[in-house]
Image (tube, rainbow, N blue to C red):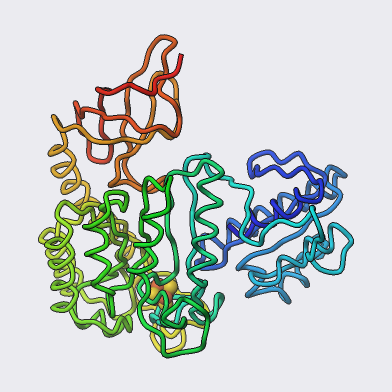
Length: 439
Ligand code: SF4
C-alpha cells in the first residue's frame, strides 16, 4: 500500500506509473523491499541487483529503493550497493515524491494534490487491502517486525472511513482489513477515534461495525488478529453483519505452554483453546485461518508431537506453517540458541502441512452440493476463478468454474455457485444465478 500511495502521488503530477516486477520498462525504477525474514530479504536484494545491472546497461535512468529492508539496513545497503541513487525507509518514502518532482516535499498544491490515502491500486479493481494500524507492541521472541515498524499506532477511525468511501468510489467491493496486530486497534486512540497517547480502549468492533455500514462495501475480511486481549465484542459484529466475511486470520504459532512461553506469546494453551471455542460458538460456520511456527529454539520432540495432535483436534479451516528463521536483533536471536537443524525444521513444517492437507480435504468435501456466493477474480483458460467468503485473495482456496462460449462471468461480480467437486485446496462449481453475465 505504501508503493500504491507513491504511485498515486506521482500520477497526480502527471507521471505514468506501472507496477511490474517481472519486466519493468520505465526510465525510473522504485523497488519496495521487505526485510522481515531471510527469504524476503534475499528476494529484495536479488531484485536490487537485477535492476542495478539494468541501470549499468543504460536501460534505466534512476534506481530508488524504499521499504522495510532499507529502513533497517540503510547504511549497509548504501555502502554495498552504490548503484542505487537514493534509499528511503518505511516511513520517509513520501520524500521521494518531492525528489522526483523536484519539490522539497510531497506537499502538492491546488488541483494537483490528492488525499494522502488515495492509491493507485495494484490489486484487481474489486478488492483492496486496508491498513488500520502500523507497528506492534507485542515483541514475540522470533519476530523482527516491531524492530522495523516500531510501536503500534492506530489510524484515526474517521480517516479510515474516508479511505473506505474512496475505495468504494473506485469500484472496490471487498476490503481486506490488515494490521500487524488487529486486536490492539484503538488502544492508542480516544473513545471518539481521535489520536491520543495511551489509555484508549479496543475500538476494532466499532470500526468494523462502521465500515460494514458504508454503502457499497460487500465483503470485509479480517487479517492478523492476536489471541491475547482479543476484543470479543468483534464476534458479535461479525455475526451481525452479512458483509463481514465469516473469516478470521489469527496467528496462534504453537500450542504447548512451554513453547508459548518461550515465544513470549503471553497466553496459555487453555486460554487459546477457549478463545477458539468461543469464536466458533459465536460465529457459526466461521473459517479460521492460522499460522504456526515450528523449529523455534527449545521446541522438543514432545512439543512437536503435541502440536500435531492439537492441529488434528482443532481442525483449522485454513493453516500455514513456517520453519523458524533466526532474525538479527530479536529476543530469540539474543537469548536463545538456534539449536534445531534446518532439515528437522523443514521436516516438521512438511509433517504439519501433510496433516493439514488431509483435514482441508475433508472440510472442503463438505461444500459439495452446497451453493455459495463467489466473487470472480480472473478468467484463466477455460475457467473463471473465484473465491467464497471463506477465502482470502492469493493465500487461500479458489473456486474453479468451467466457462465456454462468449458469455463469460464478469470479473469482480458475485455469483451463486453450486459446488460440484472438491480437492484439498480448491473447489469446482457451476453458476446457478447468472444475472450479471456479460456478452
Ligand atoms: S504479534 Fe505478530 S507482528 Fe507483533 S511481534 Fe508477534 S508475530 Fe510479530
